[in-house]
Image 1: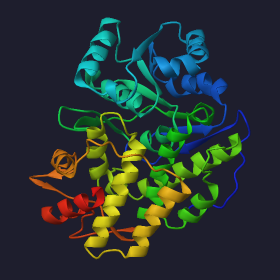
Image 2 (image 1 turned 180 degrees about the vertical axis):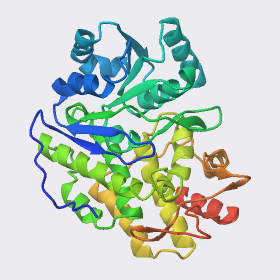
Image 3 (image 1 turned 60 degrees about the vertical axis):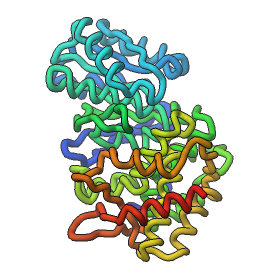
Length: 383
């Protein structure tokens, strides 16, 4: 088990290499203000299979913040570099945008030797990874996540997806990047709301697998988001480690790794129905509370464990999103039935057996629950 109390100094401009341990795996390069080293690593990691052209995929907001110097560095080494601007946020994760992107890349001469670079948050990463997996049955891409959520959670996965008419992440595949590049200088500019949203997945990791991580988080989280560069980088590194501790037990993300979906069946429905009013992290914070209430209703955990969810999320992290008025239990329940963890006609749930331990039945961490009980818990939560 990783020692979360270990103090690690991240000097400006210095990075470390982490093997994420997935199947297939890829290296993650992590540090603070390390952009000056990106080209040398890119050149090294692609030397055996040279790149004919590069496509930088980002959105206008991120490009205005960080894009010009990054693009200029790319063009100095890879003169044939194009930029493609995507819609911001979840609005880019549609079939229409995906088709436009793929057609544009093919029209501009993308080949099996080309490289896509996803420069942005989780939505940019998802659609870039999916396009890379589809074009010519698979070309190379690189993740350069710019948000806490994507640096510490989203890019630590080979899952790529877009949304459909009925729900979130309904269509996708597994496709690994050549490498990922996490520079916390990008993340420190995020507004407080998004910093909080990015940390929620780390709280989840502690609740489902590593209760020893929770005391560290209580001391490291700053309610007002006033992190120094060192504090934020150390926190992000340990959030990454908390997920890797789970992934090393299941590099496929399909067996034990499914516990990472704790609260997400509810969260995906809530996020989808919020129509942009809630961030992914805010929806997950709500979904985790509902999952805790359901675990309690079924007698798997006690009231103290439920209370810990509320204390960590509401008080320690101070993440208390306002629920959109148009959300209602019936719509949430209906939307859950197109969740990507649906098996046959049944939606099953990741539930807690205790703090740091998920419920397992018949060798499976996805648990069947009577629909009436689930409906009742959702209704009680929203009333």
